[in-house]
Image (cartoon, rainbow, N blue to C red; front, side, top):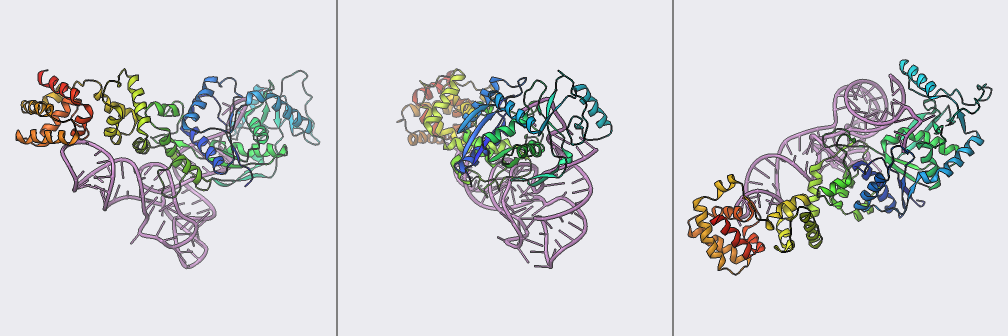
Length: 466
RNA sequence: GUUCCCAUCGUCUAGAGGCCUAGGACAUUACCCUUUCACGGUAAGUACCGGGGUUCGAAUCCCCGUGGGAACGCCA
């Protein structure tokens, strides 16, 4: 295959959401797989809605996911001269023409068409045609530039996801390529850029399928090669509903905040709409090695947070303890919890890392090691009974005599229980409540060891004398 | 309304005419492990939208229907 060049071309009107992230991921992976070039292009020609904050949000999202581009980011607003030149060329070549129809006239036309239940479209009244007499151009009046779309035949392409798609040219109208203020429009900029940037594969959302025939016609009018297209179907929300700013669409950065690891999000997204046999868990290197356009699903996919959670749990278990420790320190510090003078955070993490599915859950789970817990009255009443307190008092004595090492600590708990004629849980659960403020925890001997003698004894005392 | 797209377990998916009495994963349920809660292990239930063709044979190919979606902007 010739040098592969793909691009991700978001418009900076909001954050990078999950759908955009997947599009970027697939474009990126495809380029990487073939040793090609991945280009980032910011489509900011809509001055009204584009913001620098949104540009930054997109950049941040891609950076977090580790999707780095080889060229760009290019900004369409900085290429205005180029667009203008191409428009002039097309006007001169007769592949585009000036249209003086006013907005009012256009609106009226559309209204009529709608009444007649027709597809709303431009009627070609200013389109030059051999033997056709155009109205005289109003001098000084504003005009738009329209592309002279072929009127007969079909446009078609072999979509790498959806297969062959054909459109009758008769279905297409002469779309605007330059507004009355002279600024170029989306379909036009895309074509010029894809041509200038020598894009070989356009991987994008399938909401662009209907733009594709227009873009192909334009490309052909420009004498440019037509890239391959791969249209990805959309991602639905967890509830099966379409994602929108109003409903369910969240920034990928929100996932970071919620305690997801980028490798989990990447892995999840990779698997959403693409497959490699039965493989579920794989690194991004593996993904790049395996990725192809042939195994992309043509139908829409519903986002499933539970599966993401499962993957995230997996990656938390795999995470480097030093990194995880630092990350936890940061997250706890955000809640005003100091970890520096408490138990070694890495040892605490080892106890909890396989019991949670997000970093936030992990932070919640371990915070009792650093902050004295206040078990709810109900918990106290249920677990810190007189019998239990008696056992804890005995245990306190036994523990204080212990070498602080897991096997010996476990023995101490067991012996205390049997000496009091109690079952193991009858001691271990009150002990958990005393130490951590909750009746469940990892293996109690490990908790004792990691929490450390001083803290353990203090917390038991607090319960006994509190 | 017109054009285009899509259709396998609740969800993500495997499946390129016989390997499919349809496989894997998440979720669910049961059991095992166990000092609790998890992790882990084992097992179970659950799907080819409907109807016609083509074929010796169809989840796979074709047509129709139904359902869902997208696009029809001087937005991208």
